Length: 147
Image (tube, rainbow, N blue to C red; front, side, top):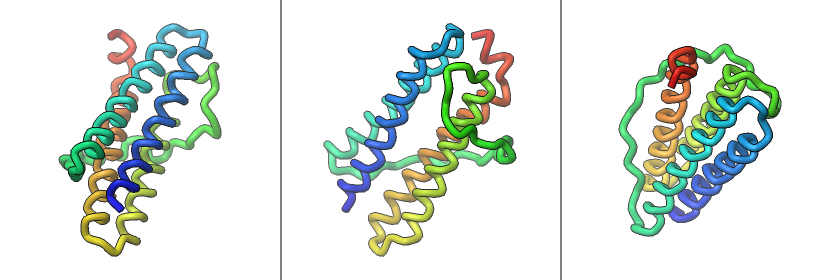
């Protein structure tokens, strides 16, 4: 089952990377295009980590990250669009990470095998780490724009 779990997670990361890469070519604002490229690269890194776990037949081990929950009241835009502001993009991305956290948490709770539960728990931690990073970006948006 571990292989199926990692393959599922890998595919989700690749889909996110493809979406962000596609958006980077559609936006007119060069800064926002770079943000999308950075997001795509980040998702590709996550997919690579999962691919390495598949190749090595190892469990994913992720440290705990604090839950900032700074933007829990944000609404997720229905879709990404080329004319979104950076704040709207980050809100979308944060909500995508929250959805993945909920998904992996539900799968963890529904799993009967301890190894599967551990894998889902670590995938959930990975998404928490992503959410943490994106919340920090949104929190420090003005400083991030200056980079």
